[in-house]
Length: 83
View (cartoon, rainbow, N blue to C red):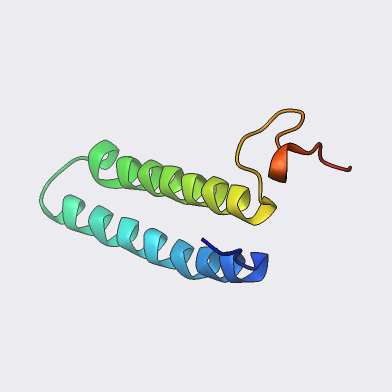
């Protein structure tokens, strides 16, 4: 697979975050309307959206940096990263 420009990945993240947060708000509204308590209807969708956004950010950040696995020598072609 070819390289993806980091700006493209940032735009994907900026587009996905409002969708995830909006979806969490909709789920929260629907759960509260269905009669669930504040813990299930309010807090659970909030933390689920935080986990989704954090995981997506970590995944896209790793893709933008070009690393396949961490540690010394974990750069492209087995070369050490120049910092």
